[in-house]
Length: 157
Image (cartoon, rainbow, N blue to C red; front, top):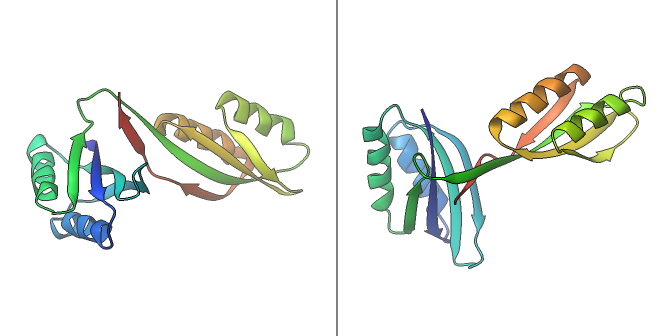
């Protein structure tokens, strides 16, 4: 089962490397990681999605994280009300004959064509993973040339 946790950390050199090292040393795979500075430039907010088969593994991960000096707080969103989203940029084949179809798909998924040329378009979309999956499946009919994803972001409600 995938678990989403947020970690507020001191914004210092090497903190991300120590956290990633903690996960890899114990054989835990990070399936998504997003990090950014907060309103306070001395702290950063991490959203980490990790595969943990049971609660004991997740508790062990949180205990190990708490041992790191630069950790301020850890929140496990598994059983808490929260909102999570992911951002994608996708480059698709684009022609005048497909323009109306692609625009209909972007409208359906509240996505936006942010740049296009004669043969390609770059589309931006923000949504839940299930929405993104559906969006990409529909765009696959036009030929996806490239895809960039942020990883999941989450915040408690």
